[in-house]
Length: 231
Ligand SMILES: NC(=O)c1ccc[n+]([C@@H]2O[C@H](COP(=O)([O-])OP(=O)(O)OC[C@H]3O[C@@H](n4cnc5c(N)ncnc54)[C@H](OP(=O)(O)O)[C@@H]3O)[C@@H](O)[C@H]2O)c1
Image (cartoon, rainbow, N blue to C red; front, side, top):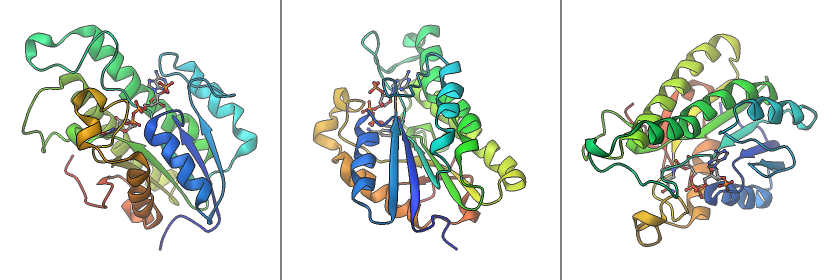
């Protein structure tokens, strides 16, 4: 049985981002979505993954707005003004590794922990955007050490929490999702404009998959087209 009820209320984490804002636009037009709330670094209740206590504060501030039947976390980072993804082992450095783990692993992990309280215990879904390049088995090209490692570690947190939730939150599915290549700020330096599709298309594809998820799907690493990815 599909988990997402009709109507449902949604929360988009990272709603200032390209894919996050596309989810807001899409859900505002989706008839079955009665309300969609967005949070980001500069929203009324801000959360910044450089400041982990802000995650718990943001979740606590939203308590009166819950419960939500759908939470999608779209926060993520690939490059900064100071560095680009590593091409070779020689490029590996502690600063970049620590920053990407903060934003792509620790932040999303603590978000699952603190925002779990906002999920509807009767039927709900929490989807975190990961990336196919975080798949260890699928790694054929190498490179992008810290991004790959931070997403692989994120995947492990999601899988582990999903196992705990089969006991403690049996009507909630926890999913890692790959959005495909999307034209966004994140992909721009890597020919994102040429090879990525518009964010609204990606959000529409992902929502189609989300709508059909069942509680047995919890703990899955899945693409925008519903294809199951190897960890
Ligand atoms: N685009 C792709 O081709 C692609 C492919 C695979 C996976 N993904 C994943 O999809 C997700 C969304 O990516 P996107 O393409 O939409 O990228 P984007 O446009 O760069 O958006 C990134 C989002 O993350 C937020 N963010 C970055 N650092 C943060 C921090 N320290 N604290 C809180 N928020 C922070 C940004 O907030 P600000 O607006 O405040 O900067 C923004 O909301 C990411 O997890 C990414 O890894 C994307």
